[in-house]
Length: 379
Image 1 (tube, helix red, strand yellow):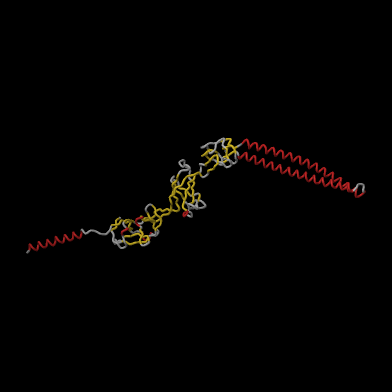
Image 2: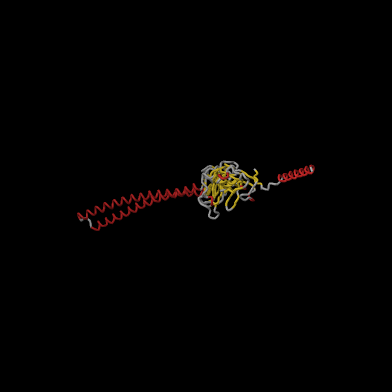
């Protein structure tokens, strides 16, 4: 009996150990989720990526102001020129002849005025003689009847004729004065045309294109050169119309692919009615590696700030709103409403961070969770 009792006791003890081992080996069926904490002081920017091009701020098509044949071409492509430097000459001989003719016309007008003045002096003398005769004949007729009334009337007629001749002479002098002014104006026009026939550089720059050569006939307004000012270059971009109000000249910044961060210096006053876009420009800093016509990638930054953030995978959409799952100390999850802000490099800005500070937030695995589920948090 003692042996049987010992065997039974050993059997019961062995069975108990097996039960304890079985209970200890039971698996943890709670889903594992990766958790994270709310990040503070994360930089966020409201920005868009665009592609534009580089251009010179000041460019001019130097054109002929007059029609004619190109007599001289005084510059070539690649030449650096100064403001006021002659670049070409058009129809010089013909225009110089027009100036000479205008000066001759002015001399003729001056001579005609001298002749008119002489005629006026002659008319004034004749009028003075006629006035004296009329007065004498009038006195003789009225006082002594020593002349006939017909003689007095003829003297009166002679005076009126002399008055008319004097008036004509004065009118001729006025006409001569007007012709002198007319000739002077014609001379100024001829001299201006002669001056305009020589094309001058409007500003300091570099000749980028030569469009006409010596011997070519050009009309008024025909460009002979394209002139660029290489000292000031700007990057130009097109933005959608919905960003028009957000762009502030002098405040909104552009971060270019050339490594320059620049303020916007120009915003188009209107939006294109077809493309619904508008142009913005930023003046570039001097850089020998930047040439007009190059492409320029850039980020236009409308605003920047620092805030709280969660990984993008930690914020989901449940029940018509954005939520994050927080793991409680007991190991269950609770849904917390999240007000989303901007996104940057896989992070989502949280505009109401108070409820998430110090909490363990599910960053991976939230898609299969529901509020109240038990989970095993993994840092």
